[in-house]
Image (tube, rainbow, N blue to C red; front, side):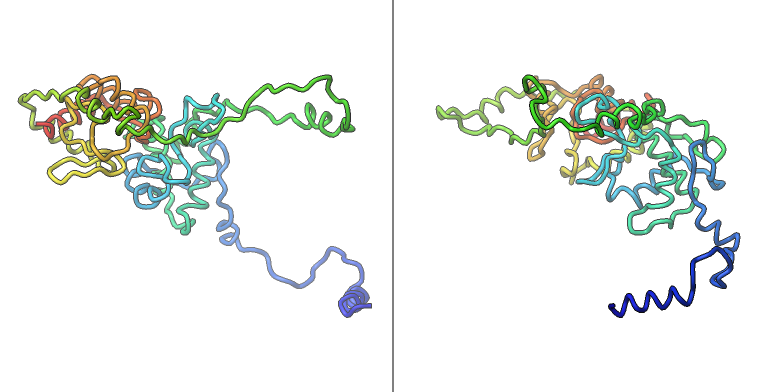
Length: 343
């Protein structure tokens, strides 16, 4: 018999059979110790601490603690999760399941942020900061206005977009009996046919617009066919320009204007009003912008207003993660500001 088995047998002889009782180990947990672990939040808001936070303040907290992974507008960075958008994709083969489009309970968002975020510094946020972050995520999904305040008082009344999009898991009754029956091992079907084909991401590189097979210079043809920018010099309301410059701060994380403006994650916007779509050199546009450029589309007040309102709806397929401006007055102000840097 090994030494381990001998030791185990000796312990069993000494202690006898295990029975319930007082073993003299430990002590009862104190109320404050239990409270430290009791941090879960249930649908409807049970378990929430007192507190509140608005979307505008949440934008600041999100920028400080969350944007490095999830992007300034919750659009996701690299392989980190996208938190906003995807509402029109749930029926697709490859749906974008975000907090806004897919999650059924707001309590899951609050509990996860409070319990596990920020990455590497979990449970360092104050309750008010968590409320503000959750409010900003809702705002990024166009589910609330920018002045929305989330608190423990109104939390339970908020219903998520996909709250009714789930069904009770009845596979134990409807499917398990089929899977667990005696499997067929031969001649299971009269015939076999392909009913679906696999789909993959399109990773085909863009076509080279340089010299063609016959020596034709396509780049020269493209340059000649691009519509010239039409910019009219008009008197602009200085108050509206100033307001637009303030609202434009929401855009400044990706777009620059001014004398030293450079392309960032979005193109520089100097002279955009009256400029052709996708016309900034050395910036890699998404396919939908390239298509708009080929159509000869030009940025005017109508197209800019539609784009600023809901970018992904106006140009489906754009990589721009910003959900859009909610107020018509803000849209008008930003357009006026952009006109001021176009003159």
